[in-house]
Image (cartoon, rainbow, N blue to C red):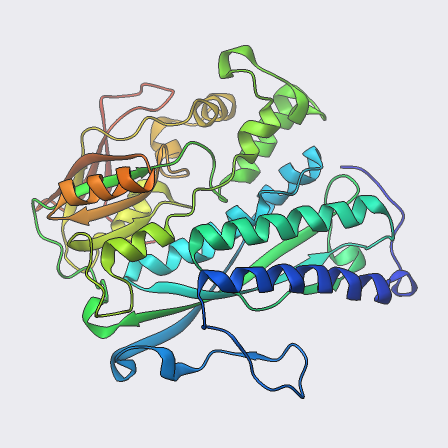
Length: 383
């Protein structure tokens, strides 16, 4: 980790902080086209005071609202190492928005807080923030949410990192769900199909193990190294690959909060495969029903993920309990063909990978690097 002088309270650049906040604030206004009419400037007397009038929603008496929270975590360091911050927002939005849809909710608006180590008045800092802002707009379009703020805080030594521009990024997502479309898990039945949505890179979990493996085996500047067996991209680019944002697609599949909008398929459960992998997240989805799952034909894990498993010496069971191993989201449905057709129309790679079973176990046909056994079995346990 690169050392640098400690920032004192006198070093906080109030003027530049205002400029950076304005840059993100202006970017956030571009996202309002994702939800036309959703966000209003509440009163002309209060600059930047925004509100979401509730009378614009159909059947409001039967809507429920909540807020979810998450962040990018240590995956931020990969972008710091590459000095490329253009896709960090995709990881941030995927973590908060894709968590909302597992209960049938539809994300509608997001607010973020960018905590930086120090703002220096250089073009490098401004370019880094421009990249974050550009990613902000692109990720919001994919998630179909409006961004309502551009909060930035300069925290000095409270924030560490690598390279010249260090930060942590967290967010809160506002979501709505109609009471008749809540996915409680109780509707899941034995024989329901499990359809996976493919993920080609690391989502924002398990990255500490990734960084440790890269540093130990490839040295301090591992992010620039190219391993021919993994292709032409550097290790940093392979690890940085942004999380796929599924929430826009999923809101169309389930119909979202608007009860007048026809769902594209009948969905009984959804699992967002992040920390804990398939065993944990499927366990959470299946807990209310007391059922299990058999995954006979899962997505193939990304080569970089298998490489990290090998470098860390993890068993296949540990790897499946840590990463998504190829599937970023799993949908339980009695209409798999409708889900697959919709995914194809949206350009999302999807595959029927298994079935819900009466036996309360999660069985997965093994595709791990260790080839420990043909099948892996996990006791069903909620995360």
